[in-house]
Length: 525
Ligand code: NAD
Image (cartoon, rainbow, N blue to C red):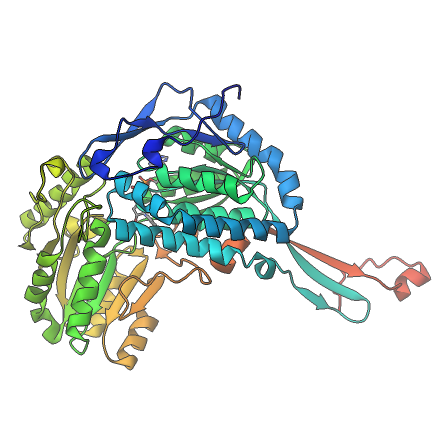
């Protein structure tokens, strides 16, 4: 790379207010701890979803830039993997402190590029930060095992880094998802080539800057840009040993298949349709508020959003109260005081969501609360991608609004006759990311838990994503490859490491003393 480094442009570092952002910048890429302006001529434009004003232009990294990123990561690997885990842990401590210091700045870029409210963006950063904090436990997590097999024989395990790993991110959690992978991959001794979402790369770029400040050596973290071409490069480049992907089923199933066919480890978290089952013995107000928050928060653009509501018994009469709660939610620009949900990511996404609402109507469901045509006050938001909270009732499993992940502030509802019917309804869905039951009955909750085929179960908890001392455990079509390799926690450490076992004998055995070869398969018994 013969170019001169640049600093991260101010439009992605200083955010007085989303609608006061100055001239659109070009998002740089990150190589050897420095930012460079890409020499690409192809750009993907990023617009503030609340105004549709241009914020930044994201380059499609050139072939030479893609290769340079892997060259850099490959070159950095021998020294980084040989660096003491104590040193890597110290760098991770610093990264954690720097993310905390830059929390507001990270949240601001998320609000500008992705649209979620600042308070929600701060949560996005925090959930990623917690993964980095958990990764500081590498000194404990990387311990191998040892078993003594008699007085002179033992087997021990080591967890060795893989090499260069690729990270491909979605748009909906611009800080959290890069941080699901980056801290775990690097603290275990790997080097990283990351491709943030082309729709909101700003937070990942700030994280790259913080990695340099935290003391990561050159080449341990590199950031490339683009969409399909950059993804295909990661899938096919032989020096990339493992891929972490989070995104839609369409892209993720392709990434899993092609990456695996190329002999790589692939972990891929995909789409969802998460159900809440409300039993009449639940605390009504707690349940309805939790459901409204989880269905409409982040404009429904969370993979763990509760997008289907099943009501049983007396609870089937609670919908008017839910509508009242949803109506009161403040939909506004993410920087505006009191805003509770922002716009959806793009005009295309808004159009798709509105089409799905219309399809529900056509297929015989009832639109109890219609968010189509919603606009917040203020001229500056006139062109934003707004959809207000929407509640659809009388939904049947064959309807398009039920079958597809809507990824917008739309809750589809149905009644069920019993707990068993609720379980059956949910299990018939092809996705299995998360589920929640609202009840005051311990036995009912336990019966539900045992019967339900979802990876993450909430009992009176709407978005049951566990903290990173556990793992993110989707199920069924919400994960590729049957969910054998999950993100962060101990399984995350396993994903980024190769197990090596060593069996050693440190005493002279009878056989060796007698000089006679042992030809039968050793059993170590
Ligand atoms: P997306 O699949 O459109 O994009 C994800 C990544 O894949 C991006 O980096 C993009 O550049 C790339 N990509 C997109 N299409 C591609 C293709 N055809 N070929 C190669 N690469 C491609 O996903 P998104 O819209 O950014 O994110 C939303 C989706 O992510 C939702 O389905 C959501 O449920 C899912 N998600 C899942 C989890 C989880 O943990 N299960 C978490 C967050 C988001």
